[in-house]
Image 1 (cartoon, rainbow, N blue to C red):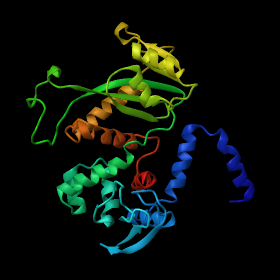
Image 2: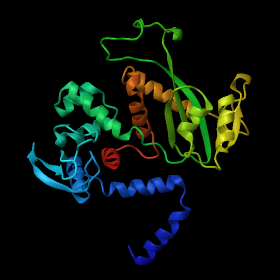
Image 3: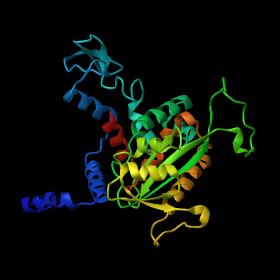
Length: 314
């Protein structure tokens, strides 16, 4: 590229929209995608070594173990490697991680993923949630333009828990919602398909503000159902609020303000969780919310993009 073309590109960056900026960042990331996740982590640690126990940078090499370089911190005297205190700590067979991540981009379930990577079911489960831990909090930095806000609900689930259930087991096929606690999920989504979501402890304005404070552009117009919590949220964060009264049949205002996109996201999220995974345990629900955000972002999720997200977290 000629120097003038490069300068024109730099001058255009300040006027890019948020969607265009994300597209540019993703395009640049793809050209620097790691071919070997473990090797990329080790090289990054060698360039900027830091003890995960005390934060000291005074580290010395301390032999090899399982073909990985170990180090010792001169300050706290603890030994470590490049993966210590990261989601990938103590995970084996790094040469199979890219193949497993490829399956995650297609929502592959545990058993097929285990067969594909020639690992045990227990290892497949561990890998899934270690990788998802790295993208769990990867939310959209800012929602802008027309934004839709709504809540949906999942039944509390103790899937996989064999003993110590805090309630009687729910009978299969019983649809009485009073038998199970409902877990509220907040989803905020703009027209550029950027998403912020979270599990609500309660449906108050303060709880909504905890998830959305600093993530809504001051010039954004927010569409939401009529509720005291949404009204207080609008006053607290200072955005323009378009109130929809669904109970009175008011589902669209001025032809463009509605909740159709966020409600469609709710529907697809529930179909994905119940249809593919047959429900998930409530304690892991935030992992699956992060996974779904990654799959439905402005760009298709690829193995390289997922690997880069993990590397950014670490």
